[in-house]
Length: 220
Image (cartoon, rainbow, N blue to C red; front, side):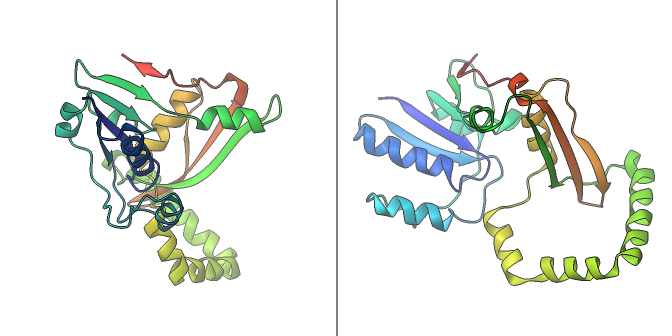
């Protein structure tokens, strides 16, 4: 009997589905667990609904935080973009399942690029205080110049639907996005556009996507 551990970021979707389908296919011959490096509050409702359509009930599942004990329990660890937070235990087999880059290449024209602007969470460091002050002053100035836009933005982020969206799709931490993008597109760096106390706006230009490196399917 083998033990398989499925790991993603929030343990609210992909890894939960993987565990459930593995358990169905194994029919008791093998065991499975799933976990997340930054677990969400609940399994995504749409995941519960879709899995219910094929007779698998995930309604009572609760996202679980990845621990070293989970990795030691497993014979095979299947990771899904959780980066260097996945503990390495000698003697275990690691599989990195990353279909994202292949899909990006499939739908992008030759020479096309991936352009990302997003918000990430990360506390400001002391050495970054000068940049923080500069960005805050610039933000205040921009708010005065674009009062109508700022008012609309405040209405958006205070709306109950926005808060509900964040429950299901938490803002990613900076190191997760930075690790994934810079490891898949060597030489390209994530850039900080605006900095706040506990978050920042970042941008990433992949360059030609055909140069992206798809993760090896197994390691070490």
